[in-house]
Image (cartoon, rainbow, N blue to C red):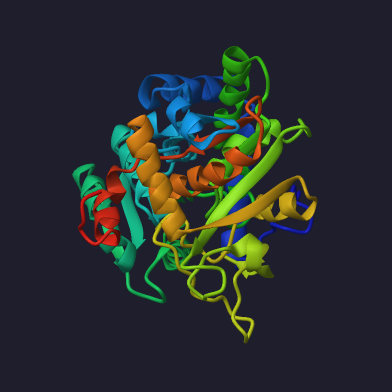
Length: 392
């Protein structure tokens, strides 16, 4: 097994799972060398997902802040409203190629669950989604969307009842059903080869962005900014730019109620090296060295680990990682809505918030490209509650 990410990554799972992972890796490597598979993937990205997603110059926001120009990569305009569907299309084609009849998946904010349910419906596959009970409450709209699409949504009652527990539960169920079931993992996390597979299917974001920035601005962006929970939208944007060392890469984590509290999910900022969900990466640990509960108002960033490639990029100093509080994210959510007519996902709002802090410190010829990884319909109720039902 080749490990792409230095000492991070690996396969820390039982033998029965390693066999399934090896089968998956072989099928994936064969598929991406098959022109028919790639052509089919591109067909669905164009005609089902609606790619390419545009890049948009956020002129009003940029003028209001002063300083750098902020551009948005509009993954929120994809079918189902987020970047997640790029990966689910690729993996469901892989599942079909492997002869699997059923798919299971975990979800936090629900966007991966919706995308999985959507692609499973398109290919006529049985689909079950595991979601923490707290996340089900936070994301009722997405739960209903999954059910409308024909998926069974199973609530996870263990632990903190959030994303990390949904991943644990999904892996356990996959072990039970490994013969006929495909585990469609949603982020760039987990045991090898999942981080590599997810990166491959999400790198279309950066591939498009390089061409689009050249067409619109006649230069590469000076900064890339994307939110990081597990980190799939970020790695999707970052990958094509990594060789371009003049481009600064910034991932933005959830500082929750503040880094001085325990109520955050700032894994790369405050975490330590450890094992979670079959990979060696950065993890939030408690005083005893156990995985600690984490917090963010964003269900998609509420995760105590991070994709191993992000840990590696931080380690080699190719990317830096910052943290944004709930309050800063909500302020950015409102600012983008008011100034640009774009309601962003609360996850994406973390990236927008950091760009809003960064832009005024830079000159007007500098370009910041923010990955707007999803739209905010799913978060409107939570934002209203956060604001105390007052007028927005």
